[in-house]
Image (cartoon, rainbow, N blue to C red):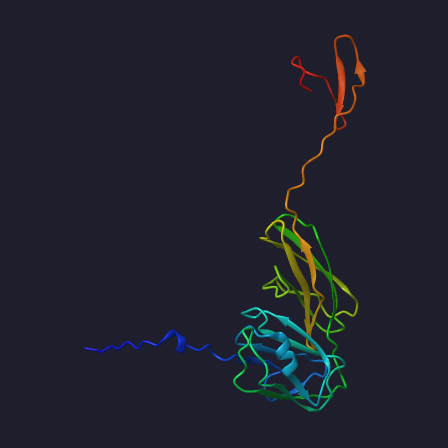
Length: 260
């Protein structure tokens, strides 16, 4: 016979797990990384974006922009895009200091570090250029998302992120737009929306040099269906016993009961 035992723990003693980095791109000790690459970190919990950005650094130091998205939870994925590319043939260290915290204010248990080495920039691929355009074909439960993307000479895939907030949460199917050097118009139809609601969306374009996120755009689904219009024109032929009316461009004569 197997004996079992139950252990009871007071709720006040239960503590939430510390936030942590679950994956990093480029991977730890990766080599030959393109000088136009972006850096991405995925966290185990939704984080306080301001504290994480403040705690983030690279060595050698690099300036750039931050973008946040959802992998499992809102604001659990950070992408850092260097402003002017990374130095070639250089060992970089990425650090998240222990001052970073999750969305509830719980600090990281310890600082996080990872490192990678860039390759030569003799042949450098440039990230795509991506512009999010206004949504069209708005209906109560559907819309068409639009963007313009330049692959900049490298095979590029495109998708749209969308949702009720700027954390998005949903993505469209990936589209391959080739490797040209001119802007390509891209669109995707989405459905299953709720009428009378505001939605956020942006385009995401990726090639071998990294990912470019377009600016956030919004649209509002109509709250009511469009009502068809009809117009009745003045009578055109009137006699003692009859009259002819025009409605919607067609001539009609009334029935005996007066209906047209």
